[in-house]
Image (cartoon, rainbow, N blue to C red; front, top):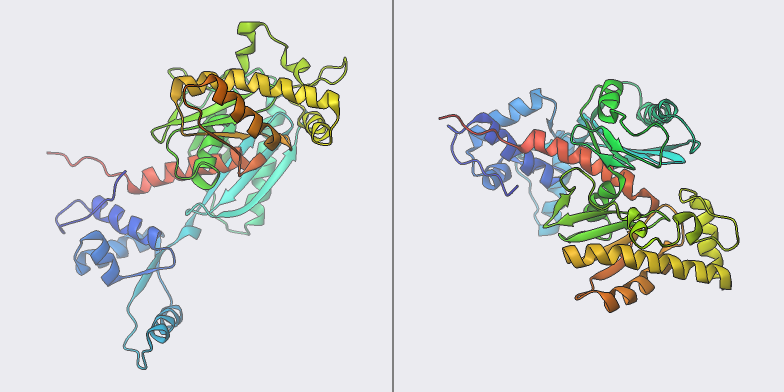
Length: 394
């Protein structure tokens, strides 16, 4: 959405409110009436009226006189001023007026991040969960992690204004899990509905790789890029893609499920891909994957051969997306430590097989990409709620 400008006091109040609120949030520490009027194109009386309404809604507060004087004094000192007039009234967006919650559902761990209404991180919590846990056990861990965070925020802390969730599997538009082979009992689960009942707030559910690419574009390695492929490069990889800055989910939410591509060539199963002996490795066991990656980095020849097989598989999977989407950037991430060592060999292989090889970089967020992207989902919902203006009826 482009810059929203108010222009006339007769415009709908919602348009003026959205314009003022957007300007205040962008200003960060505070903004004067004069600045707000100039930024939004509204008159000072209109801005004052809008601020009164936003203050009653708890979204805006006038900064204290001492804070205002301190800010003005600093500015005046910098300009060499000797005298100060009456301090201008200043207002700020109340980011503390609510909480946003981001949740990552994993095979062995539930992670949650708490943020304020500006998206600033306030805390995080995680809970281990057995990979064989039932859906009800996993939901209970989600509640435990979330309650721990909300409790740390202090007595009387606001309930979440919105909740974003990243989960393995194909996610329907209603937040239900259409298919998930990684988590027992997860297929068919009305996850969004269950969590809305739990938190009493809007819940946005997204595939984990899709959430990860949103996180990387927001505050990670893909910042400023509109055409991105994010690969969660485990033994059964998944990918999230941005096309023109918009998340590409596909017709049924199954875009990016590249972990099934090995079936086309009947290649080694994921369990055998990083095996350095006759014992297969669980595709969801990040610790086992990390051990193999560490051994390869240390020069172990069998582990090196295993990582070479992983790169070959990733090349096969990622090249399909690169040829179809022509992204600017491929971000490689995941839960296992040491995946950065596949970045350079993957880029070299893509240069061999793709008409135009994109840049390939390691994730800047690592294992936190999915939970960070889940916070971004909640923040997107909040911004749509605060800044989207309904059409004016004729």
